[in-house]
Structure formats: structure tokens, C-alpha cells
Length: 329
Picture 1: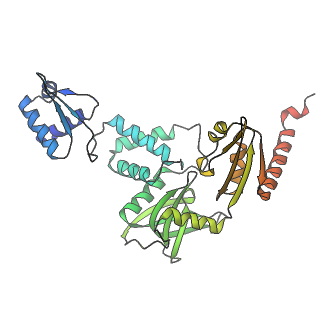
Picture 2: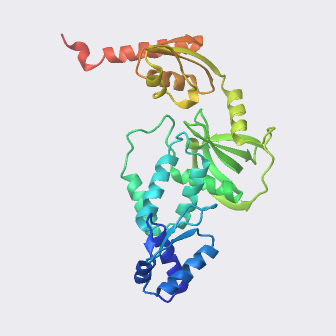
Picture 3: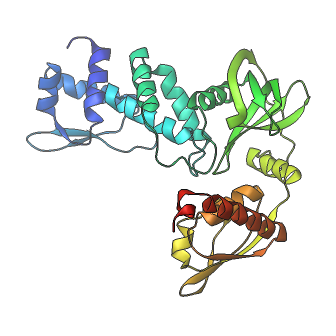
């Protein structure tokens, strides 16, 4: 292989597999001499790739962890697998899958050849996850379009549907994407309203980066943190719930079935535990999450949550009474 750049890429691709390569085998693979392999290894080191050499009669090379992450080379199957995995995670606001994951997906999809983009879309369209998470599902294209606009500091146009169903068209300067563990939110400066706003991403559609660049404005918080701004915004629009709940099940059982955003439970006995926390989530969502723990529980407060659960229980009882089993004797 006489084309040096192509040979270096092929060599790097081989070294990124988790094994040690004898110099003679690399030379055979690339159809060059061992001396050329040694020179190419030196070139990769000059480019910042930490290639380690072992001594002995048959010298070997392997890529090791360095102080910085070098560019990775992926074959078609690896690229598709990573893109599908990132899309699956990005479509739901899963705890731990934050804006960095969405940025990675945006970068990967930008450079994927069209044939691979088609494979990724086909795989995702043909696959339905058993668990969809606690929040609404989101088109990964929407997330990646927003993330790209945030990174590129481009003004964004999009359609938005508010909680009461009102539709509008917005133009904004996107600042950050924030995951709450159950939903994604966009923190942005709304140009028409001349003020900062938060948008639920599952209510965003038709995102379009206009190409118009902007200098980011200063977020009106002491720390300039988007998550802090979102939390303050949500607390203004939705009162906090001061939860006090006893579960008739071991703490480990309950912890495994409650989202971490609701806080930690404290054991109160061998087969019981208690949750005392403050939640900014909606009354309906909290009630559903408590019911999904799948054990007996008692809500000591707040009173309006007790009332909501009582009404929900009555509706479920009536629904069950009207089922096929109701007429059997």
C-alpha cells in the first residue's frame, strides 16, 4: 500500500481493535516492510495516538489509553450500532443520558454516509422498545437538530404546542438542552417575546437552524446554569409537592422501582420504608409513579395528592367492574 494517508488510516483501524499486533503481521496486512510499519507508528505517535511497543524477538504494537481521546475509526457495523444506541437513548429522557450524548449523536449523524443513515433509520423504525421510560418519546432528529443549533450558536425556528394545545411558531436563540430524567427541555431566548423561555422538547416539531449566528446572552441566574434556570422556571409554574409516603415493602425493592429524581427512601423496618421528599413534578405523574412501585403504600401528605389517588382509585375500580369478568357467576 503506497498511499501513506490511506495506509495510516488502515493501520490505525487495526490498532483500535483490543489486541496486540506483531509488527510482521501488520506489515503483511498492509503489504509493506516492517521498517515502514515502524515509521508509520512514529507518525501516529506524532499525531497524538499513544501506541505502545513491546520488546522481544517479535515486536508487538497496541493502542493504549492516553491523556486525550484521539479520533476513532469505525467500520459500518460499529457506526450503525452506536448511532442506533444513541438514538434509542436520546428518544427518551433517560437519567444519565444528557446533552453530551445528544451532541455525540448529532456529530455522528452529520458524517454518516447516506447508506448508513438509511440503515440506522430502518433499524429504529422496525424496532419498538418494551420500556419507553417515564416521559414522552421524542424524535431523535428533533434533539440532534436542536443540539447542533446550540453548539453552532445558530438561531432556531420551530413549531411549538403548549400544554393547553395552543400552536405557535417560534424563533429563538437556543442556549442549552436539559434532561430532568423524565423529559427533555430547551432553554432559549425567545426573540419575539424578548425574554428567556423553557420549551418541552416533546412539544417541539419542525426544528430548523436558520444559519444566522448569534452571540449567547447571559442567562439570568447567579451561576448561569441552565438546569438551575429550568428548576426555577418550573417552580414558578408548578407548586412543589412535599411527599410523605410509607411503602409496605423493603427499601431495596422500592428504590429499584422509583425514579432517582424522587429522592431516596429510608428503611423503617424489615418490610417497610418511607419517602420524605420534595418534588417539582406534576401531581398526576407522581401518583402514577407511586402506583407503579407495585406494593401497598400509604400517602401521609400532601392532602391534594391523597384526594387525587382516591379519585384515581375509584375510576380504576369502576373500570374493572365493567370488564368481562363482571358478568360471570
